[in-house]
Length: 251
Ligand SMILES: [Zn+2]
Image (cartoon, rainbow, N blue to C red; front, top):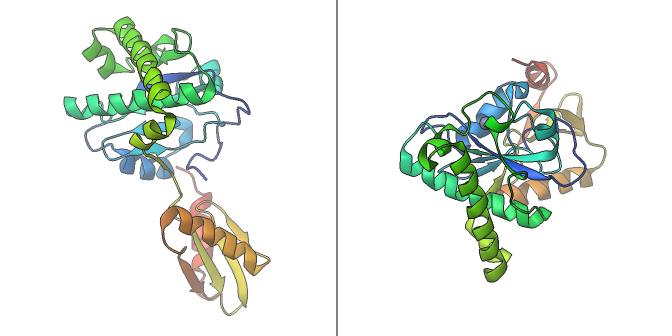
């Protein structure tokens, strides 16, 4: 499950194009930063599908879901969104992130049969009063030039994908799917010590069969390389209530 959980709605069909954003974030606003930031801030303030930063590429929302990324209903509904991160930081870091973001965009165009053009590769400022993508427009000589650069570069990369094989290309951009790091199992030992609860990072689910725990743990382990943490609590010291209450509260 991704961080944003389809909160902006399901598209239910392939995206028709891609918006490229610059995050207006500092050198420290990397993928690890956004991973925790998105989980502690109201998503109504906006989020993108992908955050491309120097440490990794974070996927915050599934491609088949919408994202609140551009303030334009058509853009939010029908387009994928990629944030080039650390756009207020060091130039070479930003350029390298932009390079990776365009590789990701090329993969996505390939995957969804999108032909890069003025209609499919979009800048945030085309639909909203914003300087975004501010750093890309600055380094490529203005908005139109940046857009043309993006379109041409994505085309080039797609040709490369076609000639070298997608597998190789995909391997160069390791996308970190955002597995919620807050997941756990717990028991309330003085109530029913055999009953297992699964906390998915947002909600608590009582399990009804040991195999449910097994399959959840198998998936968690495949993604994280270790067993899901497990806690034993007692009803007199109800940590599970603290957990449930904390999850209901929004900033
Ligand atoms: Zn933007």
